[in-house]
Amino acid sequence: MTPRDDSPIEPGPLAEPEEFVLEEAEEAMVDADRTVEVSAVRSALRNRNFRTMWLSALGSGIGTWMQNVILAAYVYSVTRSVWLVSLIGFANLVPQLVFATLGGVIADMFSRKKLIFWLSFEQLLGSLAIAWITRSSDFSEPVLLAAVASVGIGAALSGPVFLSVTPALVPPKDLAGAISLNSVSMNVSRVVGPAIGAMLYVAIGASWVFVLNAATYLFIMIGITFVKVPTFEKSTDVGPLQKIAEGFRFVRHQPVVRRAVGTVFMFSLFCMPFVVVFPAIAETYLHIPAKSTAYGFLYATFGFGAVVGALSIGTFLSGRNLAVVVRFALVGFSLCLATFISLDASVPAFPVAFMLGFCYFAAVTSLSTVFQSQLTHAIRGRVSAIWMMCFGGTVPVSGLIAGWVISRTTINTVIYFGAAFALFLAWFADLRPPEERTPLRALFARESATETS
Image 1 (cartoon, rainbow, N blue to C red):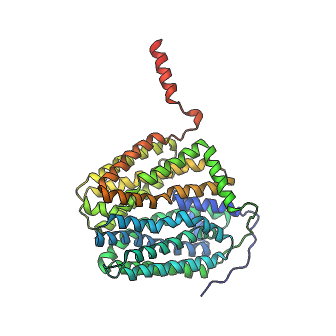
Image 2 (cartoon, rainbow, N blue to C red):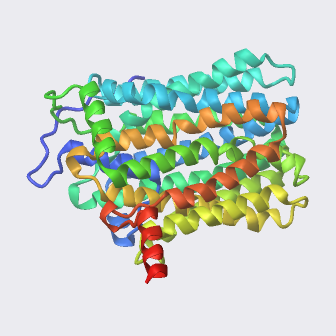
Image 3 (cartoon, one colour):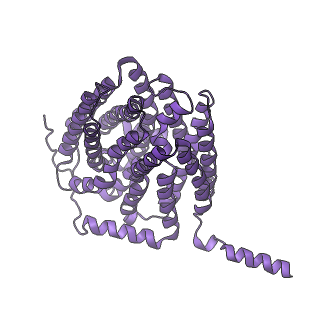
């Protein structure tokens, strides 16, 4: 049953402009770094429409992470091919780089309720196709890649549409709580999904895990059917391509923003391949089978560390200079990553994985916070799209390159390089305003003058 459109609802006098609402929601969904205020959360959850969609998204998100982690583990356990695992990650995530902008365009052209319903149905069918293909270990790799890509395309198109709906389900006074809850949903899914998926993988097999993920899309489809979605008049004064171009111009002319975007781009490209080859690291170096409950809990431990790292920026590190925190977190990430790949036992891998996740998201969240502090509401949406491309869209390319290199060298070659490059980024990520930086030549000149005197 296709959901019917709701009648247009005029926003009240206190309503936020839709552009601002979407920008704030996009930041929370991309960065997952919003501080949770208990009273604001309770207030947001009192809204039935928002509560329905939030619970639906949480259930679907857990299923998505079940499939993402278990699919990589299953493919590696069957083929022992890091290259194929990298291709799977590429097929799943690269649509975000290619189709996310299109998703934003269609969100302004068609019924958002119907788009969410049918794009969720498309992902449901794609997940069922993955389950059917993987019922036997003798599966067709090109067909599996096509099925994974179909799910990735659906997710890339539906993401901006979902972003445009969720924040509009609460009054302006509850917006902060709604954004915080979106962040919580993403982080909880990262932890709970892999843990549940690993247990189910051992108990019923990978194919049935993918069937269960397909079923979780019904949460979204049923939820959106019974939710009233306010509609607003869209702005047509500037086209999407012109908005994107303005965002790139802003990045080019703002030194701190340019340095932050460059840092996250290089971090995703050179330091993140360990996420794609996580099952191979577990089996090859830590002696943890990819098809085991222990592997799921190892990944969940890493995810839990990421949750704590993200929350630390809004809690006990909130009073610190985040431009400094970024650099210390990158050093910590480098040391933890090098230690993780050097281990040859499973027990110490769990605390190291926790600290790796902590430093990873502490670095990304503090970097994002400094980045966002340099933006105005008028430009934030366009520049945040560039951040999404550099952070999320670069990961599949990174994994693909890493898989090719690993097939010709070793896993630890790529991981050690990523750890070393993180140290370079700790030096590069000087996010102070230009007037507060001291060029090296000025330091040398000062030292020479001191010695002469």
